[in-house]
Image: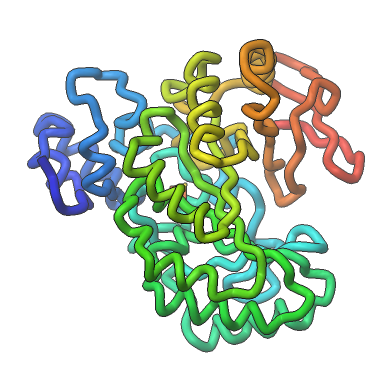
Length: 346
Ligand code: SF4
């Protein structure tokens, strides 16, 4: 069993997670999209189940070579809202600060799959980071800074502490939010040193844990979350609704209950984005809405996340409540954005 990260088709074949017969097609795929699994994730995969929901999230498959005409390289429109390198400023009161473009795992449905990975945009240089922090300091309305990427918790505690301290000095920033998969895919990385680095900031620190299946909330993962919570970090969840992973109400109920039992408040359930080569993961909005109705019928209100669509083109997030959308043709929807403007989706 692997005790090192698996980072290539060759590694996956040696670990017997994919067959030698898949080498040729997947080698073409790995030139475009990065591959990585941590040892913890590799151990979670059920090799006897061809439809294993953990494998589906991380093991590359040839379906990724099929692109749908509605898919786009920048599905949620980060680029038009990027005033300086590393910043996305889409909403008046918050910015994304993208420090790194690498992750400990590469999710096969990732909405930033064209930007993350060793072949991606690279990390922010010292100068770019300084410019990004200056930009945040110059924007008085920015109340919250969201560290994302890539996965910011792949950085060393020293670098994280440096960023937290610099943001701490900006009076109008009150909240630091970190979007990460690390506590779920590499719980040992949540060391005392890393937690100390995060709480150096005088701001309230939120951590949005990305996990999509209840089996990802192992005892080690729950213990890592408890360490963060005990240090004063507020935990919220983010998941993606994915065909073949969590597209049934029982799995979603179990996932949301596992979050709540771990002290993580269910926050977002994302409708999958239009990232290239991900159509095999996508449900329709009507199917997602039906699942949300079934979820509401079976769990406590504590376990209900917001079902969210990020509108393509940078028009922002929309909560997919019953009145926010209507089907105008088979699998075509009219959706109102937060300003009341109508968009056709996809
Ligand atoms: S960890 Fe996040 S940014 Fe990295 S590949 Fe997965 S979804 Fe994408």
